[in-house]
Each structure stands twice: as C-alpha cells, then as structure tokens.
Image (tube, rainbow, N blue to C red):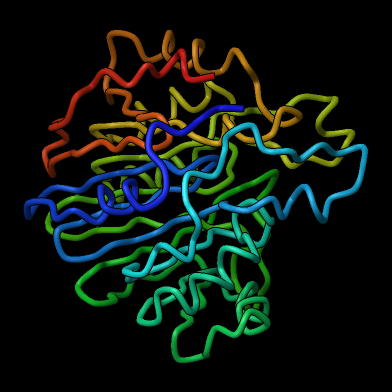
Length: 298
C-alpha cells in the first residue's frame, strides 16, 4: 500500500491554503484525481477516494487500491467546481460525488452531458450540474473551462449528447491546467492541446496491452506516447497520472520510461507524491520543492 505523505485535516488545510494570484497549487489524490487550488477558486477533477471499484467490479478484475485514500471527501467543504471527465467509476466515483454534493454545497459539477443522469441519481440538483458536449467554453465563478473530446480507445460521439470521453482545460489568473482524463494520444488531441496552450498538461501513462484489452480494459497512451504528446502540446509542465491505483491496469516501468523519454526536453515533469502539492506559476515556473521522489513513489 502506498501511503500518502499527509492525510485528513492536515492535508485539507494545506490544499486550501491561499496561493498568490497567477499561481496554482496542484495536489494529486491518486489515480487521475487531483485538486487544483487557484487564487480565487478550488477545482477537483476525477477524484477517486473510495473503494467503489473493488465493491462493484467482479472477478477476474482486481480493483483493490494500491494508494491509500488520503482524505474523506466529507472533509472537502470548500470545493467550487467538481469535474468528472467520463462515467468510468474511477473517474465518476459514486461515493465521493454523492458526498461532495452535500459537503461542498456551493460546488458546481461539470461532466459530459451523457453523464448528467448519473449525477441526478446522486442528488445533484439540476441547477448545480453543467453537462458538456466536448466542444465549448464557459465560465463559472471567474474560472474559464474548455471541454474537448478525447479518444479512450476511440472517439465516441452521440449526435445529441456529444463526446462520451472528455478532457477539460481550466483557467484562472493566467494559469491553465489541461486534464485529459482517460485518452490515447493522436494527432487530433495534440492539435487541440496546442490550441489550448496549457501551462500544465495532465496525461495518463499506464498504456494498454493485449492482456488488458482481452479483459476489457479500455486503453490509454503509454509512457512514450504521453511524452511525445506532452512535447507537442506546448505546455510548460507535464503531470503524468493514472499509474498508482490498480495493479491490473498499470505498467510498473511507465514512470522510469516516461522520465527517460522526457530527459533534456520540455515540458518539465511535475508529480508530487499523494499528500504533497506543487505550486506553479502562469509562466510554468515550479515554485515549490521539486524533490518529489517521482520514480520511487511506487
């Protein structure tokens, strides 16, 4: 079990500590989940803080957590925006989202339009849910959000509801974070990221292979593909993710391979351990201690 460096109320206090305008604190909470602390808003993306996957997914899948949940979602009482990139249960975590609905009563949930019926089942009122089709920009409380479609295995687009799998670019105070959720790398996604020009791009690196495909796991980009996409994106910093939660769906060599692929190249890697955060500027400067033991976290 990977133990967070900080947990509970001490971690929540650190996450919510104010940051200067033009900076953002990025706090990984396991899998693809993170909290982004802007100067004037707190945004949670794809939080997975339960054991829901283990509870609902039968054998031969093994969805026991590799990383201990660092906090109870009931402790997150000041989230402004909650984002879920698609309906897979490690990205749309039912216990976490049900709890956040009441724990952060002013929060707005942003999710693909195809997922909004699930939000209603968790008692999210319609007035607090924004369904996106994957090709729009809008603003919530001074935070600009841009939704874009991504290919998990392939792009899946409903003529009425739009993209099933989406990424989101989140901007406030001159800094932008693009989180692609689950995705393969392709030319179209690279072009969209170049148009977004993110300060930080967050990419999965767990990859795919024949054995996982046969079991039914949808594929993601691997370490080398993520490194190439990161370079093509024009981002200042890259945040690798989706590599610390389920033994069956990770590549234990991915972190080392990703680090090697990014050597002597930009963007630079940021990846705090769960329980730590990275403070970054709009110019892409890392303002906090860069010693995150990235390759030794597993």
